[in-house]
Image (cartoon, rainbow, N blue to C red):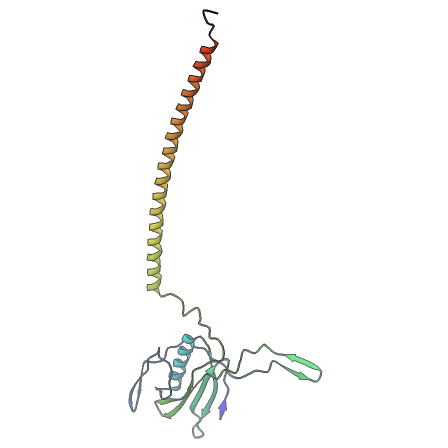
Length: 213
């Protein structure tokens, strides 16, 4: 019997060590799924696939679950990209057209199927990696860690210190230049005053009556 639950999106990291009758199943939470991968439970498998999806940039949904006819427990579960399948956007009832919310499904085939072999042993029997649509990495993944923040703060502080040093050097150069301009202006003023004084002396001599006139 297949069921169709609502889509789920949990940010849970799968267990790294999973015990079973055949020994301990070492599952690296950062690795890519593969057929034959073992988990201790369906929940651990789903948590692993959810975390994988978050890293890759897509959301998951439970597509189907198969239950045991003997006791009704889940014996297999198929998870897929939330863009799996297609939705009908509109339908007609008589002459009235009913509009539904825009579909976000695009017929994506990416999926992850796990089956229970025996208690404490769930195996990945099928894994489809490729998507038919662009993946979007969540902003949460790109969020810097505290160590990265501290490193970036140190880098910015160093840049600010260098900028302040450069500004101080520019101010000193400007102060030196202004001092030179003031000295040059003062010297030029004295030169102009001296020239004006000499011109006046020459004019004064020209205006003095000659004794032989």
